Amino acid sequence: MIRIDSLTKRYGDLAAVDDVSFTAFPGRVTGFLGPNGAGKSTTLRVLTGLATPTTGRATVLGRRYPDLPNPGLEVGVLLDASAQHGGRTGRETLVLAQRTMGLPPIRVDEMLDLVGLTWAEGKRRVRDYSLGMRQRLGLATALMGDPRVLVLDEPANGLDPAGIRWMRDLLRGFADDGGTVLLSSHLLSEIEMIADDIVMIGHGQIVASGATHELLGGVGTLVRADDDARLTAALVSAGFQATPRGDGAVATDAGLAAAGEVAFCAGLPVTELRTADGHGLEDMFLELTAADQREDISSRRTTLAEGVAA
Amino acid sequence: MSAPALDAVVERRATTHRLPIPLSRLIDVESRKLVDTRSSRWLLAAVPLLTLIVVTGVTLWGREDEVTFGMHTTTNMMPLELLLPLVAVLSVAGEWSQRAALTTFALVPRRGRVMVAKAAALLVVTLAATVTVVVLSAIGTAVATRVRGIEAVWDLPLDLALRLAVANVVVVAFGFGVGVAIRSTAPAMVAYLGFMFVVPMLSSVVAGLWTWWAENGPWFDLSWSTSFVTAPEISGDQWAQLATSALLWIVLPTVLAVRRLLRVEIR
Ligand SMILES: Nc1ncnc2c1ncn2[C@@H]1O[C@H](COP(=O)(O)OP(=O)(O)OP(=O)(O)O)[C@@H](O)[C@H]1O
Ligand SMILES: [Mg+2]
Image (cartoon, rainbow over all chains, first blue to last red; front, side, top):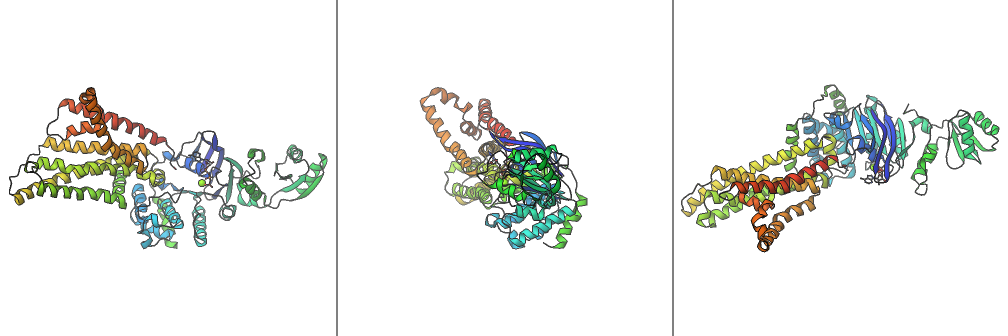
């Protein structure tokens, strides 16, 4: 279990991570989704003790990562596959990890086998590895200590389709076994396929979180009126959750009839009323991604399913 | 991926133990890192190779009064004094230049322990290299007496031998400090070599112009005070000069740099 608690990390004026809280549960794959520069890697660096938070805290298995006596045995970490010593052979890289963790030497060959690196590839220098091979090597290091938690930053980068499929199966198996997986990505399609829960971050803040099927499954209703702010307010005061999507439409958990009635009572002519098509998350993600959409994100924080945090 | 391999991952789960990582294991790992890349291997191999060349040269062509065991040993330490500090620089700076620090400190978040292990590994290597040079010098002395028909002079007092070891530890410690402070291979190497060659030069120029420095320079100039350590005789004052200059150039900067290193963000 991973718990991120009101975590803030500032670099000078820039809040790279701004009051972020979420939990990654055992038995589930949690996808940490966000566009470039959203603060994913920063969060994961703080989580693994490589950076200190400005405020807030992050715990793994109930403890701060630096307090784990032998972290490799509890948490498998792969933050950047290209951050490995190019002068060492792949095998030697694994031997160093195996010795540090105090594991039997046989683990090295088991791990090479597990991630699909051949004996000959293991003897080559990491400098000569392709990105995908480095990714596999990094995964081998992460999995070697047989951890209960995996923290992976964009692990699919550089993997071929077969490799992505392989990794998906591996992470699925790991979670089904009771393990906790937190992996980041900037690709919704990738996260969608693999994650049970999604935490979406933009400009350092959480913009959506919840179970994948709820976030993507088209729950709720979409109402559109000329004045989306008043519509949102009306829905909220009627006891529903409502989020303006920025394009005049409002996403709400009210049923079709209830949403229409609220709008009618508020005197707002409805221009569109339908079941949400489930692409709200994707729209939101694209909006975050678009460079010209850099206004205040917190104004459109979604309260869609808060399932993960609850 | 094969199914048995995955099963192995799953099965080992039960046996996970949670003892802290002992320092001895970290020293073992850090020692291994000193020799497990091509550049570090070459650098370390260059020490005995160069020593062998110097030994051979002095043995065959050195002036007769140079071919005593004591003189031999002192001369033969030169390659070691030049190269081992570079090994120390690489050992620390390489982690950052190659970004291997990301894995190192993810596996051992107590960064201070990693640095202690690195220092200990370097100390062991330095002492081993010193002993090797002494042994090679003894062989050289013996060979020279045979080949040149001169009388062997076994004049290496224990205290000089120990002082040679101290001098080597001092330069390696300085290299380590430079690595910790600069944390980037190329600039750190330049800084170290600059110190080795430029500072003594400047210091002697200043000493020529300024008599105060000529008298008191060794209190501050580490390369100057280190040169006393390998001289046949050393006074108590000179030990004190080694201590103050080492404090200034090694202890203080290393402590400050390590403190920063413990907090700095690893990326
Ligand atoms: N050491 C640092 N100093 C200054 N700013 C930093 C530092 N590290 C990260 N940042 C800034 O923090 C923000 C978040 O960066 P981060 O690397 O966490 O993004 P990310 O979500 O991982 O993006 P990507 O998908 O590109 O990997 C960026 O604006 C980045 O420029
Ligand atoms: Mg990143």
